[in-house]
Image (cartoon, rainbow, N blue to C red; front, side):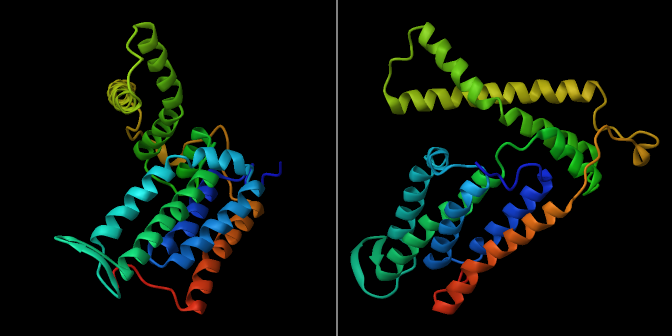
Length: 256
């Protein structure tokens, strides 16, 4: 399967994600969000992610998007024909349109992140943040450690599931199982984060040292021609939904 983003700098992926998602955050019309979702789905195989893998990775969005849409449907700004009204709840023509637009925006913002931000190497990300963006070493080391810890969540979830099964407390309802597992994972992440912060502080990570500005690097981080082409493609993918929405007269800035 072709992968046009393989080998590009991790910063390029971050910039491309920002470029693609920012216009969607500025509007609440359904057309621009729908076009953005369509563009992301069509380009996903070219970025090394098959459609089946994309659907599996986006499964949580099918829960998050309806929850966002329902709140907007019931409590969104009134306008047009009113279909239902009871106390604080009013379902109108405008709130229905807003609900659909918000649900599409959840997919339009999250799908590019899933496609572009996956499989980012933490070490390469740190090299790019320090050498290209020249960010402070304390921030860079914290970002690298955080990204590396994210890769352990699945292993921690599996370990917790096996531990609960061995103790005979795994046969509970799905909702209760999800709640207890999520809380256990949160506790484990907080404990690991505290231990990691203490260990890094004890070893002097992030502390400025003489000659820090002229430090050497094991691997140099550069932006090559391919990185600029990927960012140019991201600009095009971000501009297309805006142009179509403006041309069709559906563009609606957030808050208006």
